[in-house]
View 1 (tube, helix red, strand yellow):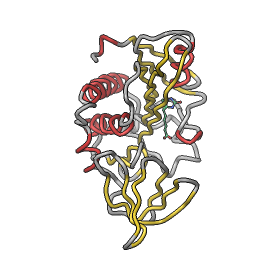
View 2: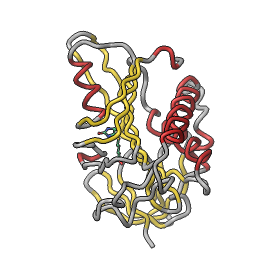
View 3: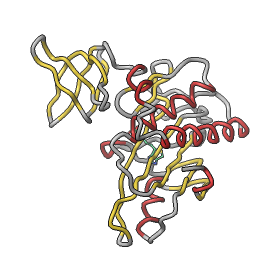
Length: 241
Ligand code: BTN
């Protein structure tokens, strides 16, 4: 796909850019779209959490017609990570599975969802990306202040335009190579959790182990003991000190 295939919608404020696209799909819209908002009043994170979305961030969602989206989250993480690396003073790391970290703090979260409509028998895919580009005017909200970081301290419209443009280019570059998994090497080699002690949550269990590697299917291999390890396809990971 190329940028000309997308309708681009710019908003000042919206509840959630993912939900905005879902509503369009439900109404029968099918053309690929990119929606970007300065603020979200009801930003959504994974696991039904909220995503603080103050002015200063980039809140962007991409609507794509159906495809096998198994690797869309790791692929998007690599596209975002590449983009931030062109602007930030330090290199980012990807925290399996869908967060980007800069200087050991979260700078971006990704939420991919599928949505059905009455007008099409296959679901559409929505890729939602939230990036702390600039620090909010009054700093981050108390609940994320210690864990969040922005790329820049002060807002600059020209920087934002260049950033969004490169982000979309990088996304399309890796999206067009998704069948060949062109994102994979970077995803495997640039993961924050590898070699670290982690607490993982899966199948309603909470366990501690060492994150050993990300495999070619983007699963996280966690070793619990000499004789027991598990490949996780999804789940939550907390880094232990
Ligand atoms: C997470 O960190 O748990 C994922 C956060 C994803 C946030 C983005 S911002 C754009 C899009 N719209 C939303 O409501 N969520 C995603």
